[in-house]
Image 1 (cartoon, one colour):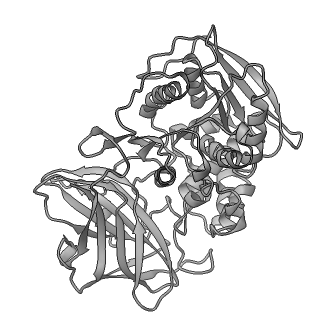
Image 2 (cartoon, rainbow, N blue to C red; image 1 turned 90 degrees about the vertical axis):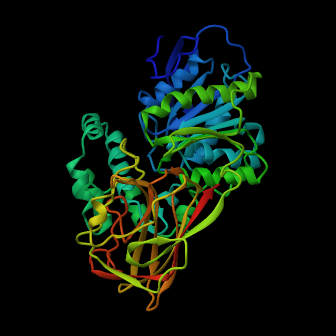
Image 3 (tube, rainbow, N blue to C red; image 1 turned 90 degrees about the horizontal axis):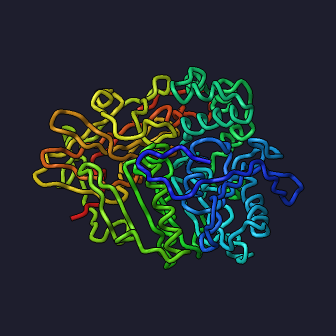
Length: 531
């Protein structure tokens, strides 16, 4: 059968045939449904069988990716996770993926169409399902471990994204919960409409306190996993540690290919996983582009680079890369081929908080800046990584006029300045309430006044009658500030609904205004500058 073309991608030479609804038995007797997508015609057995496991159905965009890989000569088994799209059992995010994935890998290796090697593939949740099995199988059952991993915009520990440095990632957690609830109930028309325009139910749900009531507004009922996420606000809880596969990342000995974007919600974790494997002596192939989580411009490179990576490793095809890392430098809008990430030669350069809203390379002033954070009128989020197609740089100029946003500017640059890595904000901070959030964003301030997002980060802090040193690690970036532009920094106490507002009280349903103070002396931004 013919497949729909992916923009910018030359289709592979094979037609494909699809065998629907294969029943794959799990260890507890539950059967999961899968589609087998195979190239038509003689292929040989050099290329691996690709396994994809996910909860989003077997007919959507990722199915298009699977067919595109089959057109390149790869047999693909595309399986629906437990409790989704006809598969038996109850869907509980993350919890069953390790045992179900292991059972699936063992089953695949027993099938007559198996080619002798297994590669795993997929974005987002379908990357989590890869991490869930790879390290454990390598340790305990290496004969059934995957022979290669192809990880797209993903991470092995969704708890760390759900509770981001102590703050609840409300927009993503509740938006994803509503989407999955509709998928499980097969409410496809509302789901399709939600992809086109904002859902008023979700908008109302973002404003609900306490947080545990948000799913009822968004979906009309309590959703068991969302209730668990809100209840377990410590990543050290057994609930989260049992779902995390970060510790087993270095156990993976198979070749790994990673692709992500500077505006993806999982970017920091994926780059840290890259660093874990690099430290273990097995650096993955890495591509980082100017993309968000669901950017269409990512489709073609995902397929072309995945196919090339697997053909090189398994079929001896010529190398298509001149360096292990391919990264897009925003601001300059150019691709770079690098031997490592971060690139060699990066040094930390500090900008201090000075008087009159200035950033200065010299020592800071002894001033303090005070602002009021009101959770009833929370500081809004402006852009930032999300599950929606609109991730990417946005203009913060109007946002920075708010009284609850502290804005600082460096001098116009006389030479281009590139940052490559994770900036770190070190803020001397004090709040009148027992809990507060510190949100920091770096912007590229253009000569025409636009203040465009580069990267940001957040940190929740506890009570202290004195100033305390708060360290906020910002999103990784590879960005060039042009001559005449200025480096801008904003500091506030929230970004709602991207992050749930901090009520300033142990009572999650009661809000309190907070007076926040920043001491300039001891506050600075450390930038990873590439000479």
